[in-house]
Image (cartoon, rainbow, N blue to C red; front, side, top):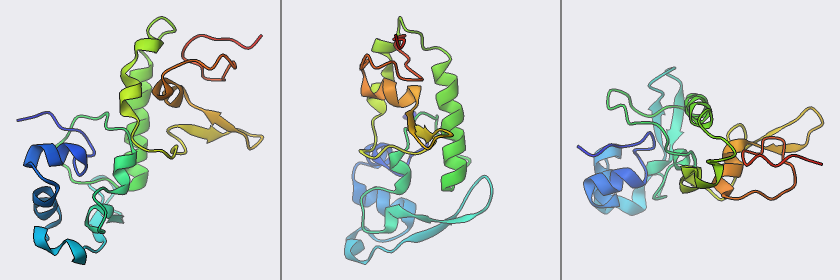
Length: 162
């Protein structure tokens, strides 16, 4: 079986099942020909049990979870995670990935292949410092794929402010 990723409800599941409509009918339990009748599906987090909305059945062809980088191997024993639990595990996996990044290999890092959303995600791509300023994370800077030479706080490319 093909190795999947945590956002199995997104692009990878379409590849696994062939079409979005088939994936939709399997995962959400709605008939594929009822695309105009999609409604938000409530799911229980497989980690904490909290109820949360799954966007796959909302008429969109993706869920909110597709904005997160698909960096975790798929665990078929678990279903979806709520936004808080998914964010925490993604942050852990990104931290593990970043441990192997050096200024020498940053420009060839595969993080740029994980651009999933046009909107940065707080806590993943940036955070607000004590002065309320946006600080880009090393993960975001790697996804961008190059050094801007501005001496970013978390520059993975090794550039230092002069």
